[in-house]
Length: 171
Image (cartoon, rainbow, N blue to C red; front, side, top):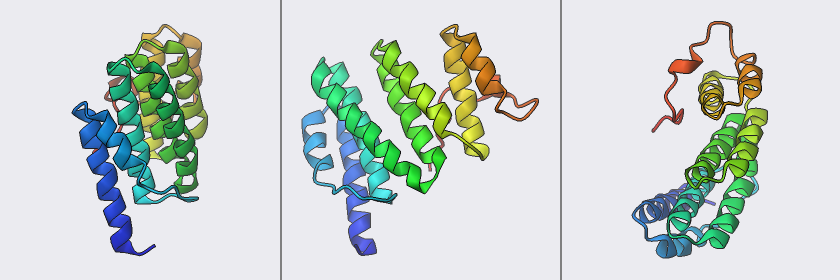
């Protein structure tokens, strides 16, 4: 695939995200499914995974539980493909999908995904920010054993309680 085609597909993913955030999940869903899958991390695959997560969020708000569940499962599947670009890519995506489930009061799903995000996160500054955000989520739920496990993975003295709720940095 040439760079122009990849850029075009990234733009489609970004447009699908915009549509989903504005509640136009049907249009977003059509757009996102025009983006092909890939066996490796690409910019457009990353945008597709984010778009699917946003579509899932919009579907939950529209009370389309079954469709939301399948859409978020697809986003989770793509998160594991993102791991081929680095563990933190997968971990961030799993974290975000978990946040969508938490917003919908589906704590068990959120916990499952956040536990998977902890497992996916291995090294690096961004991973430390993600682990800190996960520790705060678990603390807020009163899951202190999980907090201790995560904090033990951070460097001594890391200010995990001051990391923003969303560790994702907008580019």
